[in-house]
Length: 109
Image 1 (cartoon, one colour):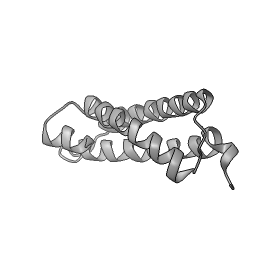
Image 2: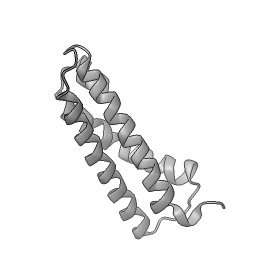
Image 3: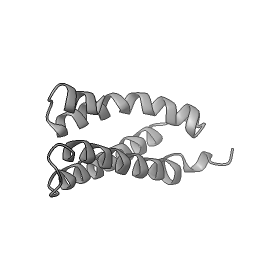
Image 4: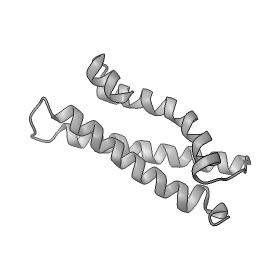
């Protein structure tokens, strides 16, 4: 979705990124809680931790996106490389935060 908005529709990279992650937030909550981490908890604390983790990962994502967009790389390759690097940073940080902080108490069950 992010690359389709960015490269296909010409939406600015940061806006395309934000749109992708807003949609992803709701889909990912269900998948993380129910499938990946098998956590049936629906308490407010878990939801707040989840939102904080997503925001931290998104902030890292935006930082990587903006840094890579400034690299002296071929202009045709730079936007795609920036989006891919940003996606990888977001995914890795998000998983680590989910595994070791948000859903920690349920691991191993």
